[in-house]
Image (cartoon, rainbow, N blue to C red; front, side, top):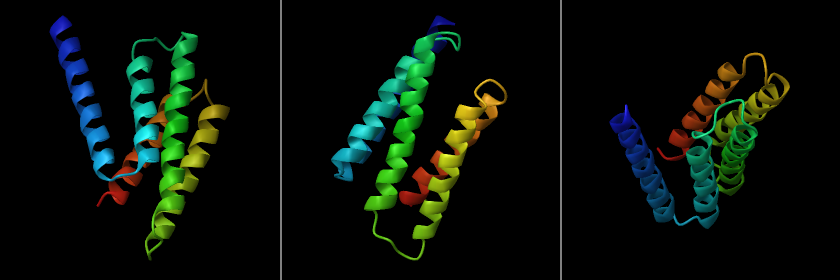
Length: 128
């Protein structure tokens, strides 16, 4: 079990470094800052159980970082014929965040999963 935890941490850190280097290559300091905050909040978040207040604090920071990243790229990217897709994904993200806040005790795992899936679609879309 200890070896799995070490491997898990190793690959999480490797993924984080790769992501930061990729954002650095894109030469957008705001993206680097937002992604760095997101990664640090995720790294801290995984060490606390759901019943700990710090879990909620760092989960909130992570979800807000994701939203800020999406807002940054909707406002910053050159608007071409596909720009409406970014705005649609951002709108969905805002709705999902509202559902997360309103339904934090009911189906939170579903909304968290959809929130992260929508962000993944957004992230891959802007980098294609």
